[in-house]
Every structure is written in structure tokens, then in C-alpha cells.
Length: 437
Image 1 (cartoon, one colour):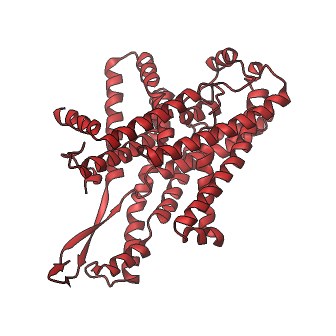
Image 2 (cartoon, helix red, strand yellow; image 1 turned 135 degrees about the vertical axis):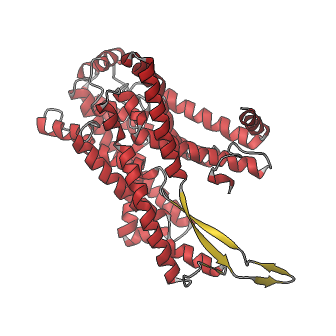
């Protein structure tokens, strides 16, 4: 505990780090406050009474986890940041098949700016589409009694307010990434998830009625969390030998270093992408509240306890793990960089053979990583089979746990880097966090 308290004191000694943390906390607080500002034309008290008797295992209950309760409360941030994530997925998919987007990806900083701008435009279109479905769900669904204004005016105002709210949340995320600490988009998703944790723990303890069983559940939860951290931090180290170079009177190289290849090189993004894809059919089904077939279709993609949902979610998680890894890690670029610096893998010829060797290793270690991510993603379904409440089961595994672990580790690495740059000991001086290396 003494080491932890010293690290916390060191954080507040660094003015830039202190400013970034306070800035991030301030913007996240604004986001949380905006989640409880109700849409125009919605009676909050009537809506709360309707939600109190609703089944939590439905479309609202699932989406609520990622927007911190704004969906069920019909808040101005009800759609959260998910439309932006969906737009990012579409742009990245097009970058793999459309020559124009492939050209933008090769143009460096200018290309990234154009891609960011196109992603923003796509976010507006997707948000407008989803806000229409949300308005239809509110007005003609079970919550229709809470709408107290003209239907046409409510539809128009809801589309405008929700689109503006999502763009504002996207702006908050970009400001956090640029001037704050951590990835702003991921932190916004995480803070909405964390908001449900205290109440979920209280509900689980009250419903279990047995302290021993509750402590066992907490213990298993800790083991699952440790497993997620282990896989997230796990990597394969490839030895790289650098030839000796004489520059002036000094000799460089001649030593063996290691090229780290992470088991889960894609991080938390595949699970976020997969969850965004799972939201699309449910959103489409919300356009037809009076159609029994479409309602069953929507429930199939929101019933986390169903075997069909789990199977589809598992496959999508595995696919996006490979997809995002292919985007994030470029074996050819790594091999070319190694060749320019005079490095080579023992027993492997530089150039094309090195690129193929790295690609083969990446493919092999990504398989267990993707399977593990998929298993953890559907773990809440198994937890609910053993009698764990849905609220706590969402933290027991699934998207919530993966996002919490991934975002927390990324944020800790950034804090660690700031501390080490100023010759302070970081949080993990006795651990194995990769930020220290």
C-alpha cells in the first residue's frame, strides 16, 4: 500500500499529468450529467414507472449498459458513442476493399484527417437512422404513454436532439484523447458501464441471500478478470539479432533484442465492434413495433441468455479479432523496418521470408486469443444459468469485463509512461505491465 500511495502522490506532483486527469474527469462528468437530461416531450416520471415493470432482458436493458442508463431514461445521449463505432467499422471495412480508402490509408496524416472527417459524416447518417428507430420505439412501443407532445413534432425533435447529442459525445471523446488521459471513446463507454456496477453488486447480494455464495461469486469474478488481464498482456517474443555497425568511433548493434507479438493484438476493439454489429438488427426491428416477427427477430439479437445470440456473438468476436489484428499489425512493414535497421530473425532470411514468418506466428497466436475473447464475450449466458442476476452477469464476463480491463490497462500504461518520463516509479514497478518496457 505504501508503494501505491507514493505513486498517487507522484501523479499529483506532475502538473501536466494532474491537469490531464482533471480535464478527463471533468468531461466524463459532463457526459454523465447529460445522460439524465430527458428528451423534449417525454414525461420522465411516467417513463420511470413504465421501466420499473419492464423486462430488463430486452433491447433497452442491453443498450442501457453502454450508455449509462441514458437509453431507458430517454436521455439526450441515449445513443451514446455507438453510432461512431459503427461508422468506424464501416470505414475500416471499406478500407480493405475500396481503392479510394486504401489510398487514404497510405497518405499518412492527411489521409487520416480525411478518414476521420468521413467517419464523422457517417456517424451523422447512422445516428439519424437509429434515432428514428428510437423515436418509433418510444412512441408506439410500451413507453408510448410517456410521450406528451404531438407525434410529428416529437419525431423531428428527437432525431435532431439525439443526432446532436451523439456528435457532442463524439467531440468529448476526441477532446479527451487529445488533451486528456487515455482513449476518449473507450473511456466514455467504460464510464457508462461502471455506473451500473454498484447497483448490480447490491442486487446480487440481496437476491442471493447467502454471504458465502456471494463471496464465491466475487472470487470467480476475480479469477475471470485475472485471466482476461493475462491474455491481454500475454505476448510471444521473437528474437531479433542486429548486426554490428561502426559509426565514427562507436560500435552499434551486435546484440539480441525481441520483437513482441501480443496474443490479443487487437485489444478491446473487436468486442466493441462485435457489440455494435449486434445492435444493428435490433435497431432495424424497432422500426416495426407492431410486427411480431420483427420483434422476435430483434429479441434474438438482444437476448444475451439465448444460445443463438451467444453463437452469433462468438463468431463475430472471432472474426473481428482477426480483422482488426490484420489492420493493426502489418508484418511486411515490420520486416522492412527490421531490414533497414540491420536486424534479422536467426534462421530467417530478411525481407519477404521474415514477413511470412511473422505473419504465420501472428495467425497462430491470434487463434487462441480470439477464441478466448469469444468465450469471455458469451460467459454472461453461462453465469445466468447458474442463477447469477443479469446485472452482475454482464460484469462477470462479456463485453463489460473486456472493456473495463482493456481500457483500464491502456490508461494505466499512459500514466506509467508519464511517471517514467520524469524518473518516478510507476504503479507496476514490481509487476509485469508492458508500459515499463
